[in-house]
Image 1 (cartoon, rainbow, N blue to C red):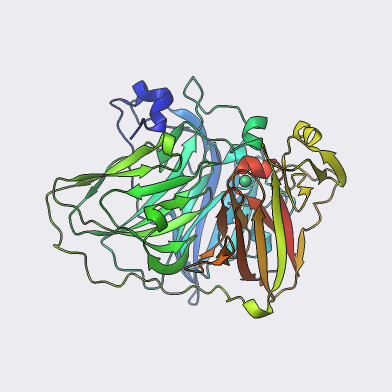
Image 2: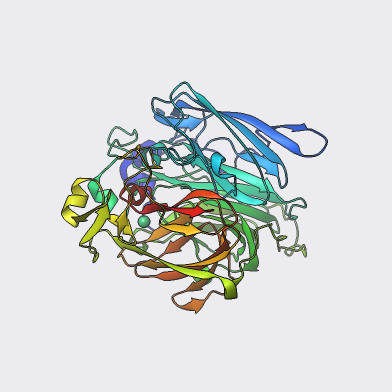
Length: 489
Ligand code: C2O
Ligand code: CU
């Protein structure tokens, strides 16, 4: 294995550093209040600049932006069926909003500026309140200038526990991120780079786990863990392998899936995506096994090591069930579903020569001069929903209008040379076909990763009324126009 990306620029600074905790505190950050029927979890999220010890306490901190002073933000935990009430206080030098990624919230709570709410100005507050119908691993993040605000640290994990949580010995949450640090060690201010926008996005040079360099994970032989993985990076795709272990995938994007070994032995997470793993500690006392990332085989690196102690918990994996109970997402009626094609074009080395921006067909060179390079069905988003007020005082027209309660199949066609994690707001969908073939697990997701030239079909019931975002979660691609709205009415 090669150098850890974090070492590329700051190897010296890392040596001897005290490494941060790999496990978030399990305690609830929320106060619960019961009304006799439904419990309401309440908290305040204060978004503000913070000094963040990315390199550990022995080194100078960097200036990040954070919720409640920590990067990632506080781990929010609630129970399925509860209601969440969050007061957002904006103490940033910019407007902001919060989006609840993967949660099927009412449209007005979705946190998309100029579409579902006005941006929250510095010094102002906004109250988000919604039910939690589904258990699973979700997250929350800014949806205003996301490419800058997420990179600076405005994101956190949100865990909704099953009514009967799966039996495990221990649960850990791994928030994977990468940062682009400049020569001074702080966050590089190279936001809005045309190269990042038209290529693979802002790939960082420092990979972190829960906001710091990943720390080895101590295991007791025989122990069973639930690992909740979440990729909050702007653009980096992780492809994780677990040496000497056979983890089982039990949930994707929060939604239960038939337990299975990760295809080709790799847990692949595009930006925005989650995976719940069941990990049995099958190593022997004293052993050490790498968890590595080889998404880019030329830059493979060890993220951390699983390190076995001598205290044997049990001789063989426990016989406890590992399948999660179903959530409440409505099942699409495939024979009755209407079908729509969404074709993604643009980027470098692609075949897109022109596309429509603000009603005008423009050649690629003119689009690039306006900071754009991507289109959905030939239309480049002008940028509402990402903090730019609509140029003509109105939001983009919806790409699709869907009838409430009906089933739809969207055929997603990646006609580019790049990867795109495509995210839908307000709905979870089944991935029913990939490359023309039925998928093995018909997994529910809210973000589907399309490889270069790849096609996938997703199916869902359009049951949540409103105007919803649909965009690439490589945040620089989203800025560059790979975004649109679908209307459910
Ligand atoms: Cu995770 Cu539109 O976002
Ligand atoms: Cu993309």
